[in-house]
Length: 166
Image 1 (tube, helix red, strand yellow):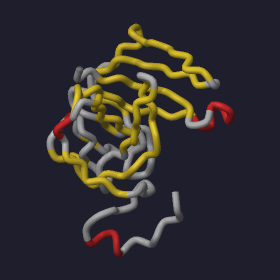
Image 2: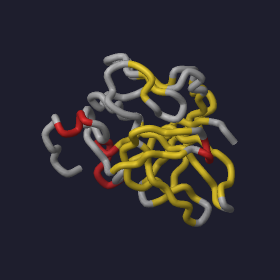
Image 3: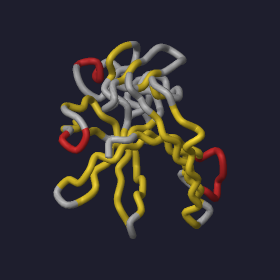
């Protein structure tokens, strides 16, 4: 419980590497009798660059799983002690994905999830304005998926043009 993993997977294994994605996943323990997870996208909310953990990863502790249907998942243990950071433009986020510094306009996006036959299934991504608290007790201010750099709250959102549907 509380251990983070870097997870590589395909949105659509039939389309190959073009659908390869990365997420950061932490098991938070049970909540209302069901498993609770924090699943953060690695896409920076500034321009969509890949965000990295601000701490060590342990590639020697990599686990690869073939889940069937062409889906291959890789899990790598990590310690994002300082949260997450974007090496491109300096955006910084805490361990819950909240923006703490730099140019991003909001928190990191998250994934919906479900549990089927004992397996964690990632769903669609959604945007997050902010997260109060942490882990299973977190209150997530959730919005429909917005593009990188697109404001989802506050007065700034009215000054930016509407984005095409995601």
